[in-house]
Length: 138
Image (cartoon, rainbow, N blue to C red; front, side, top):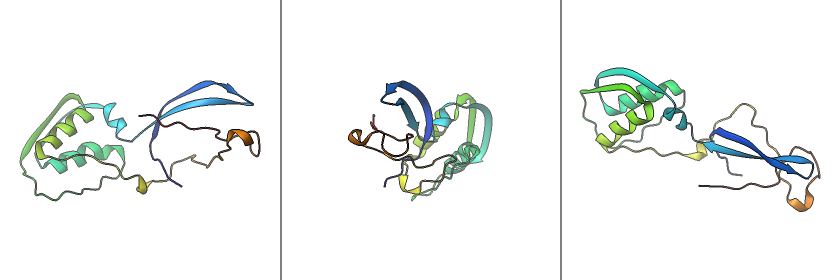
């Protein structure tokens, strides 16, 4: 089994199939929330990792630093009505830092019950609430 961790950022009905409904969902990483929030702040005498932790810490998701180089300190960071996503990567580029996600550290989400998958030839068997098909898009 492979876990896919994320936030449903779009959900829509695609029509009716057999005795149920087909839905299409877009799953985005939690970092998508960072695009949605803008702020005004001044951070003084902060390292870039400190800036990242302070700005992204409000989202409540763990940030595990895997930095190998020492970072320069003493930056004065100003955020003036820009999204957190515009601010953080701008400072990360300054130090050559990047983001990556580990899907193996999947956390429990409320209401994430398993729904059985039935191939089309066995559609209708078992519980009527099941997944009949999935499609990954990029």
